[in-house]
Image: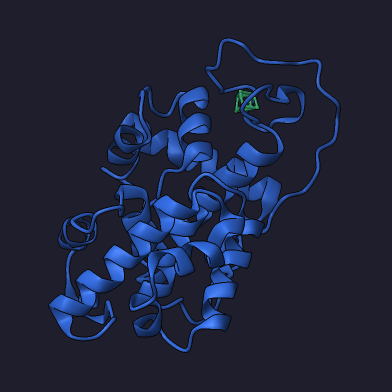
Length: 239
Ligand code: SF4
């Protein structure tokens, strides 16, 4: 068993003890909804990206209707999620491309493909990166992969599971040999750890369950003994 795999199993157990097994919706979200929700979630908090997602869903009857809107209209509807221009271009480009290729807006054909084939197809759309494609794999298609966002990248590097400079490199190493059936809980609980305890500016190491094994050299042991819960997960709330 690889060193990374051993560490993932250990860290996952500690986080499940702290946070439990995160709930998942009974019916997985539609892959197109998931892809658009993930684009909206880039560089913003989950509550604002969720509001932008709901606004698009409430305003338009279908993604086909969104696809024919002028960019400025899409942008004005999603502004609350930030980076409206960039995100509206990515969303429109994806919707128009998929409509052109498949004559409908659906990603159902992905279900019979391998993870690599799916990653290859989704990242071929301009504005869709590895993290977004991995979110479709994990949340909609229920594959055992761990998408790497800023929290997962930071915490896994601090703990010493990986030693990388970019989220995409972290993603490759973490997913080379992901232990079976734990990717969703590992991903979700690491995000909570990153939001609540292992914060970007100053980690609160004194209350961290990983203190004994963590390899981060600049631990902060003078933090308060509590933290604010932040367990709203956009990608488990999309329907
Ligand atoms: S011990 Fe500190 S740096 Fe290490 S994972 Fe915990 S909070 Fe982060």
